[in-house]
Amino acid sequence: MAGLSYTSINQTRMATGEVYCQTLIELAKENPRIVALTADLGKSSKIGEFMKQFPERFYQFGIAEQNMMGAAAGMAKAGLIPFTSSFAIFTACRALDQVHTDICYQNVNVKMIASHAGTSFGQAGTTHHSTEDIAIMRSLANLTVIVPADGIETANAVEAAVEHEGPVYIRINRGYDQQVYETMDYGYEIGRAVTLHEGSDVTIIACGSAVFQALQAARELDAVYQIKARVLDMHTIKPLDKAAVLKAVKDTRRIITAEDHTVIGGLGGAVAEVIAESGMATAFRRLGLQDKFSPIGLHEDLMAHHGIDTNGIVNSVRELMQLDFEEDLDWEDEV
Image 1: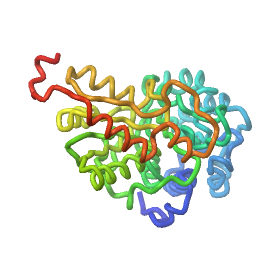
Image 2: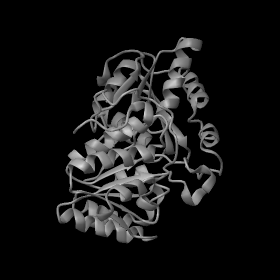
Image 3: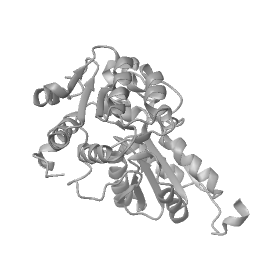
């Protein structure tokens, strides 16, 4: 596609949702098949600007997420590329029947942008926390699940989603994410993890808002404790980059996952499945919500509460470094 009309400098000043909208506007200028849908959340999800640019390609459904998903499926069957914009909790839970049956079962080309994910809308309370959506969505056949680390990666994910044939779920946060990437040109590819920091002692595998925290933790671990931590941005939860996980197990033998989501069935669960099926022993820990709902509060405070901020990750790595594993590299006796 042609160059976007905003820069990475602009992106640092925009909420992730605004980056998504601006990216979609630029793509829609070149691709008349792109349409946008929302369920009374045009302002909150930032997709309202698309309406100003393309009023004839914008559809407002009111508080009716199920209807929106059904209509999106029909639009896709007619050859359009519909992008739905709603909160993650409403997309993954309230409209799940339609996502399952109308979109995923039929394997239609709908792109779901799920904002205010995890605890990023922390002060809105448990009804607006979306801490189960990764587990739910990755269990649906035919669905690609992406959790970008920042605005720049969101732009890459949206571009890739347009090129990808089939349903896609992109999970983004409410507000202004910490910047992980400087430019869009770092080789983004659906299903392929990005190595942000090299290390041989432990690997931190993170997604979404936890990626920046993991990167900061790796730098602190190196500078203060001389612990070399590899950091993987696992932006695609499905299909998961199994090769990157297995390489990390072989190279570091210690793995920590970090996500703003329950540890059951999300990134941690996906990585655990890969490790268990490999038959390779490793010291392993999942950071996230430990089978409980989150209290109400600001996002940064909730991340600290759940141990997925920089300090929480550093402390967990230091604890994990105390765990033993078999030193030999003969995996045959461990299968």
